[in-house]
Length: 261
Image 1 (cartoon, rainbow, N blue to C red):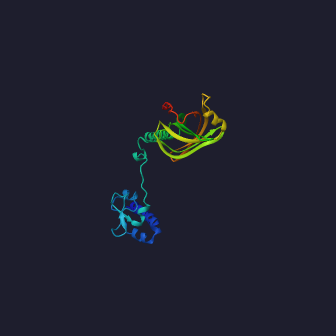
Image 2 (image 1 turned 180 degrees about the vertical axis):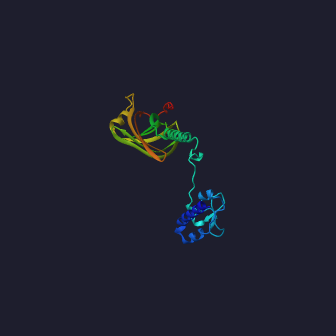
Image 3 (image 1 turned 90 degrees about the vertical axis):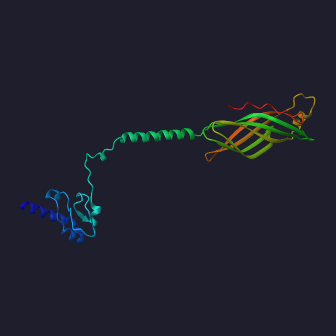
């Protein structure tokens, strides 16, 4: 009996020291008494109080006691070291799968969205017409462009600018806005017409002199094609040289070049 009273007295002193921070809590703590054995009481301090306002059930006393509501947030839950919740299964497998999925997704995104080349290849002259006045030669030429998209996403041709030169002089120009969609890994042919005026006297004689069997004019074509894809614009530069028959008033359309693969 003496040992039991001494244990209760020491525990009461501990309880007073814990609850001494708040006078109101301390006054309520003085009325606590244990309803279980002294062994259980020593592992749960305090475990039971007088029912009333401001008290909640003690979660660590198996529902056999109450604690002041002010101390509810000061409780600490203890989990045994061998608890399975501290050793989740398949953790390494889940981490490996997550890393693998991220790597595969990133690789696929880079592979499909990586920009590839867009090629523009002049396919030659499709048709031409010629007209003469006293000193000038007027040529209307229709040319063909082969455009190949090697990307895995569609592109759109938005603008075309052409300069036609003869003897290093610009004799014709054209600039037009376009909307020509080209699908992934596909090619399309595009036609454009340029009107040129040649003022060279020697060229005029070549085209109008009947004693000459060959009436060809060499034209140097320089162009810029603007394409847009993925909110980005790209300018493609191309050039070609073409011989145009300037003898007659019109020429039969030439055979188109084969469609690019």
